[in-house]
Image (cartoon, rainbow, N blue to C red):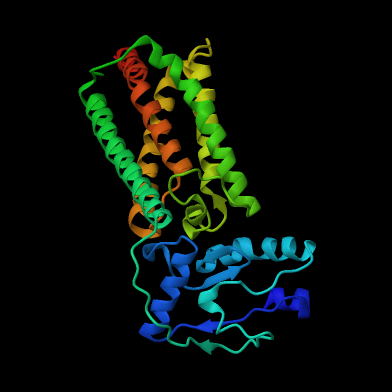
Length: 302
């Protein structure tokens, strides 16, 4: 309704109602024609030009900008998709139209379709592997802190923490930009970042972008790492514990977010997976300094 009010006759939304099994079948074939697998198809399913928006979150975040962009280009017609040719009249009304059953076409998947399905599977495999890595590192770190011993630590790990913070900060700021500016993310060949970033889970309480929370966290870890190398009294003394504690929280939250991608959103964001791996490495690398700081604080208390 706000778009209709803003643009008037410039905006024509033609609605097709999905009711029967034949309607669903046609919807899935239309989705497949745009490279969208069955698992990623849902309603509302909105087509504007060659772009597809799925779900109310994507429509809300992306449609206004797409309408503005297409109007600046001189306007755009209804999709030129042969599967919809019989359903789209020259002048469409706003009344829902039941889908006309279409003949089922059975054909072997093309090379492109197989490639898209492979990409999807690779994305889920990558996210699942990252989740296993996070849980294993989490158990290792918690167990190591409990017994007061890091079973492996090298000097280069300390120097890697700020570098990882810079990398993570860059990823988080990019995701913040995507989440707040309603732009499409560059996903590369793995996963579907835009489906993840346009979901309701990309915002905490509908206000704070998850990417912004990550950026704040990485900046705080970088600041704490820097403070640990200064002579600022108790601040420097306990800074390694702060680094480990923040990284530990980040890993727990990343496990939760990755679970959502795999089992709720059903889409994988490679940027999110990258950030999850970065924060997990920071947690593992900061365990030894945190143990030394904790041991030192215990000695002082005695």
